[in-house]
Image 1 (cartoon, rainbow, N blue to C red):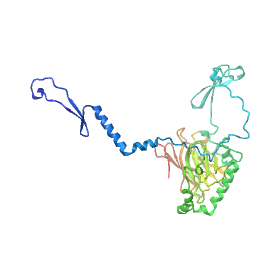
Image 2 (cartoon, rainbow, N blue to C red; image 1 turned 120 degrees about the horizontal axis):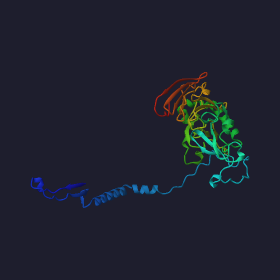
Image 3 (cartoon, rainbow, N blue to C red; image 1 turned 90 degrees about the vertical axis):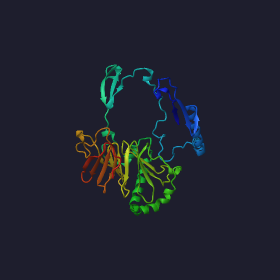
Length: 386
């Protein structure tokens, strides 16, 4: 507490003004008066230190600062194939950069990059045959092969294509056959009588509760690398006899993991790539035979494990004339637009979408399909619809 005192003067009593004495300050804390402000602050700090000492918080903080053993990445699941049979063994020496040496590149080179994917090509050699030496006059615009750089033009993807699109890093000689065998077994399991009890939560809990109780995040057997990049969505297969999880990542990969698998080759992990951008949502149908997936690339696909195909059931497009006959024509509003969430309605004939620009869309999938309504319900993205 800080108080001030001022001694009375003759000026206060109506007398002639005289020189007043300076104000006197006193500093008190907990009933003790200190000569200076610094001494009072020091006393407060000592009081706080004594309270922390008695509370035991200092000891707890000291224990938390003890360096712990850094956890290692899981060795189960996806493993990059770094020793492919078709990879060259004798690689040529690495070329030195002409740019770093200050040497002008021969023939045609990229002189500058511009916004919108445009590049300026330059030429510096008679052998170029296209551009005059030293010129920077040719401008070319890079365009995506498919709209918004999607995986394909919307044609169905079979398992072989979806596996091979994951790239050489993840594809091994038996990746396709292993995935096909797993899906065949999963399809048979989904059609068997035990999966029909999926609508009974009590029955499911009784069948797999013992398996779930054995899962531990610090156990190597319960952790696996399912997709290459950051996970954006997760769904679990509605089986009452097995634990099968599905994850979608930042680059459009979808991985299925049979947690109960004892395979030392795959660890029960199977990787596909039906999208080119983050997989925003995953949802299994009630019977567990189809997987619905949506992506920031503006596509919605249905993976039928019986036919082993990813079928595009909806896609958004801009107002370019070539997309006029597409179901999602005019829905895409530019680079800030993507599909944030997708789910089925009461039946698989109705699809609900939410977008990054606050829109909610209902799609009727019967016959050729149509958009039942497209409403703008928010100024920001809508994360879920039910």
